[in-house]
Amino acid sequence: MTTRQTPRPRLPRRALPGIAVARLTAAVLLTGCASQERVCGSGHYPVKAVGDADGQDCVADGQDPAEGWVRYPAGQVPRYVGDEWDRHRSTVAVDAEGRPVRD
Image (cartoon, rainbow, N blue to C red; front, top):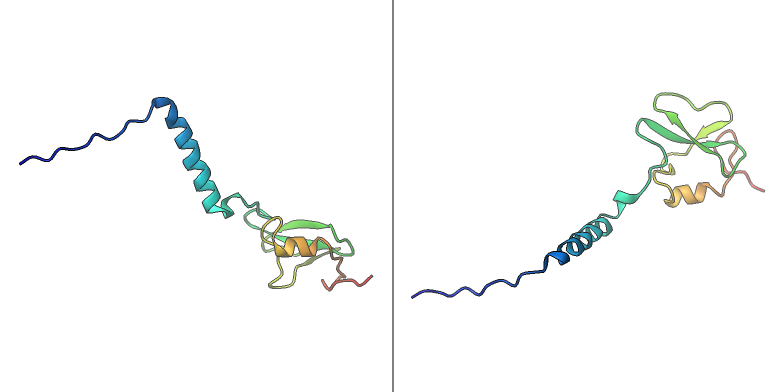
């Protein structure tokens, strides 16, 4: 007794690029964080300008911030552009101790 296999339907060659694009799009959407931009590059950490809500820069690991700049408080360091702390700290000016300045 032999079993008869049903032939698999063949896709037209012109459909293959569309399928590849769909798979790539799905992979990008499912990974999510792969598209997030880091606030600072490798080997650097972000610092905040004293008295300026918008001022932010990056300093090499192992170095202290220059005068007029402070480290972010522990647990409140922005990691990615647009993350919770990046959005929050972009609206707050700080004093030389890193404390929020009241208007």
